[in-house]
Length: 293
Length: 286
Image 1 (cartoon, one colour):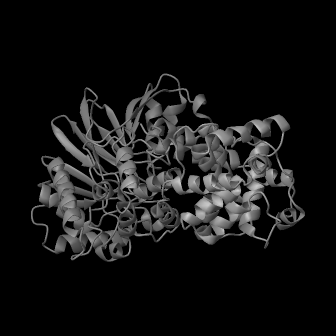
Image 2: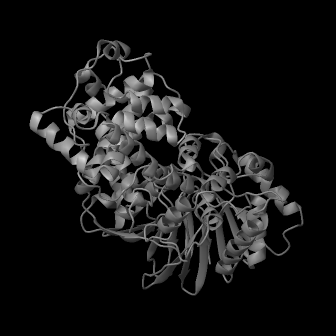
Image 3: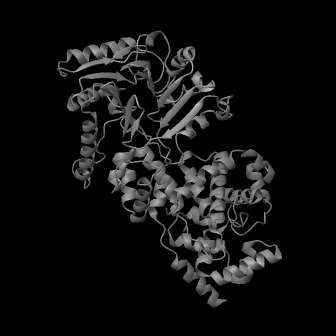
């Protein structure tokens, strides 16, 4: 199995001279089996270039897993060319919208509504299949399995574990570490804490045996202090999670929109120099880079 | 008539208590700085609200892998934003009983109430009401006809006579109520609102929603009145009354528009009502 980062930026695309090395496109990860079967994790603007390449070898067959439906994870979908051509078979998986009580099919339809886009969903020519996901579901694709885990984000967000060719990756989508909303001394502090611990344990158990963790690490610890509840993790907390779960290799992604290449390099250097992360291999995700498992 | 009066007071007394939590959630949901702890504490204090949320969160719509057994549990699993939106939907629904009531088609009544709530909120926004206060406009619209629920529930026979008279004579419900009961759903609704300790402005808007030019001029009352006429003209649902009343001069002056002008100024109403209908589904029993 191999994966290639097509988009690594968080929140909104950030093109420009300061983001050339790590990339300005929003989240999209191309996952390939040894036989070249294709899974796409999230459809941020990074999916556009992938779609153009795929169109050179039609018909296209692929499985797109949407972790959650915030803009930066679906923004590229209307620009994914294989959707427009007959003969292509695309399955779109994603979480439900529990408020409107609709499935993942409603997301693409909404994106393509008249005020936002000139082509309606009925005009797409590919054979599109929609599968709304549930927590801890395992989808068997034949060449791989994809298992979901509900993460902590201000929307339904499923992390995805992909097993393929005897190797395993886990992609968090967006995720903030679980935290206690009560203060020590409050009546519910202990009960809430127990549930938080239970969630943390469940996440760590889910991650055991994973070869590569691709994780939201948008903030520094200092930034996180004023961004609690925004649904994202920090570099340090992500590395600690990997260490606790025994994951050997981590790709830190969902780079803060305003973060320059130089700043990301400096943070990486600081983390590596700290000596705190022992045998852990980690790197910043870079757009275009391939990781071979 | 004295006897009828006693019956009306009894009917109001028999209505279940209005959950304070509903009002607090409506307020909190429009506060971007609302803390998760604050929201969770409010929900926890109301067992009925808690039960509704747990039932919803455990439904297939959420696709969770394990049963959520407490609000703390739901809070850890769903986070502030999802919980807030769920609570907001349920709060609006929780204010009005959902079971079928003699003489009043509750589905149509619901749609009418939600549509007036949505239109009142839109009118408030048009007049520059802040995001913070616009939830009160929604609540005023939602509850304006609550007196009809009291009458339909606890004075069913008389209320059916009111419906028959209004239909036969082509008159407004409140005029038929005056003839049959010697009071109106507006007055009964205001009595209930007072018993529920709702804010004075809200009680006043229920009391005067058929008489905006009686008493001190009120922006909220004018908005509810205009919204009621707009919704009746567009026939979104029904609360048993389809007589569209003309906008008094003072109301036209406040908006600088007549009824048709106001309808033209809110092209998103149908869509927003459709969104609000989700609240109905959120509160459904199964």
